[in-house]
Image (cartoon, helix red, strand yellow):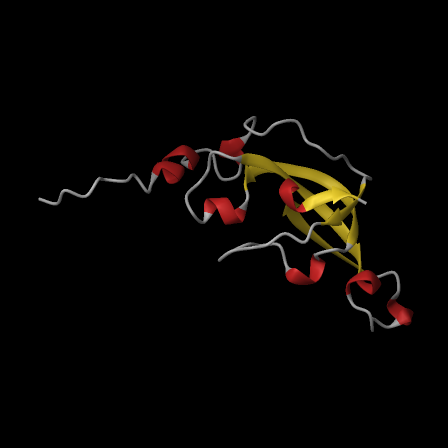
Length: 123
């Protein structure tokens, strides 16, 4: 018999069973800081080990297209820290803002992705 403490690595699975993820976090985040139409900028935060916030988005302006769901950010969830729930936003970026050499003939092209609130600030 081992003296190692038993850690329930399945608590998240148990919480989401029959509900789904991120639905199991509904109602756990504080009020959303941003709303549809807000002009934001992606913060350039340090990331250790893991994040789903792509480097090429950092420092770039965007527009909120939807407030989509509440969930822990990927960098917390990867460490099994599901206590800090925050809002995720669907964001629209102009391709020409992301890529300096983007062809002007395609100047209206956009990219849309979801990011957690901690990575966003007012533009």
